[in-house]
Image (cartoon, rainbow, N blue to C red; front, top):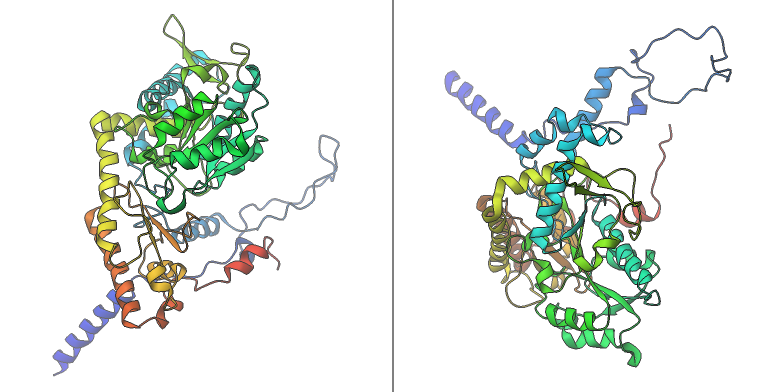
Length: 512
């Protein structure tokens, strides 16, 4: 009997350990200032004997940094890092953000000494390898888009948008078309599109997508020829294709033709290029300018504030107006950075130096390791995974737009909201199950939106687990078991916060 009780105790302890394994190390981590003054500060120097520095300036006052030791600092930031959910933790189905796996091969290449330890002010003769990397990436992006003028400088997607519109504006100004002050933007666009146009001193004219979720020729004509005009006031249009509803713009060629006849340029937001890469080139459906988010399509790291990279690609007619610098190859086979002095028609510099070189390396490594056939499969698998989710959940959640989707599918809370369970509740439930929520309440053209992008790098196992949780949510709501959804998450380090108050009254300064 004693032996049986011991075995039972061991089994019970083992079972409890399995249940609690995700909670046992879920510790709090205070601010670094709250650890100071520590018993062992990292620097212990005697007070200076003279209050005047050698420069003749008075000694600086205390800088106010926490006085803690190196182990305390290291543990502090390691513990904080464990609270940061990432694609390496698990499923990250953010719609229109393409949170995909970052292959470690890319990281290895980016850490090669000849790349990792160079400086942007080195003589060009000493960084020919780095310049060749940039040159090769420019050429490949030009080939994939059929837009042969490429500038790698923009530091992120929105920065690429700014570069693209400034390139368009520069072209119009130098060609006597500076009076064009209107940019056409669909109502389903990323918010950065109208914001960027406004920053470039353009007026935004909205193209309604109405019930179909797409831009139609009729709606485009109404916007282009608004108020009985002839379209000569329009500088261009900004359209994401596939759009933010996860749909391919079927009538985009006709719209592009009308725009070009009126003298405008077609700017394509390349955020969703992951659905097209290797399958179709945007230049072939009328695009004049587009930016590419290297993190979205070519797997460079995403999130945490950077570093991002948003190269722009343009057709031949806009090449002369690209930002500076771009990498060019000389007759002797060497490479150099073409400055504004060599191309005075350029819209100028956007930032210091040449962009995020580490991201250029990672993107090129990804492209070359996949090859043309691999990139084609990337987009095919991304579209397949999204349509698999749509096919499995279309009976459980409301689908606002009929038909297959591209690389992301759009659902809403319409069926659940009637009994008090909203998109926010569903998102918080996913957190309880250890998943990052999908993009919520976007695009704004539908109420209670849930935009889901599984990407091509997720296994069927992880996608099926997501589907299982979503189906369980729908089933519980249908059965009337709804109260629990308002309390989730229960197991996360933080419960529900007052997000409205946090946005309106943020606490930005720590006080003792």
